[in-house]
Length: 125
Image 1 (cartoon, helix red, strand yellow):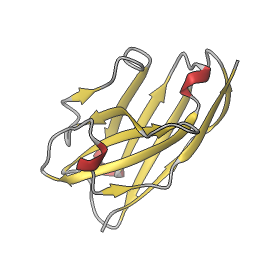
Image 2 (cartoon, one colour):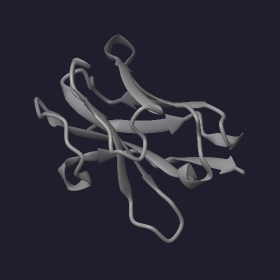
Image 3 (tube, helix red, strand yellow):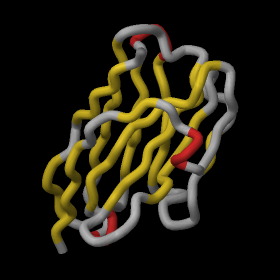
Image 4 (cartoon, helix red, strand yellow):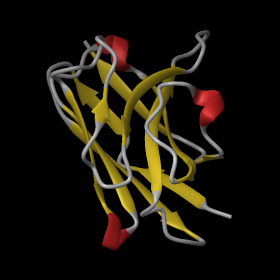
């Protein structure tokens, strides 16, 4: 079992930056592709970023590409999401998720086995 805990959320003004962290425990995530998703009030959860086990492959949707960057530190068992040039529409609960070991990146939430409880990000205008 893998336990994921997100941190780093908060309130920021439009144009500002935040860095989210996802710390894993229970076992190593060094062989797992990882992802970030978000859910705004009244909306479905949506894909934000994904990274391969070694960091060599990353994917983003158009809505965040060029502003957000996913990275990982396998020795620390942690994944990060650097968010720059934040907009009010980025306001949501952000979730970290892990794919099964030795699986590739994916933008589809149903392909992720483990989820954190989320961290709130609020961007004021």
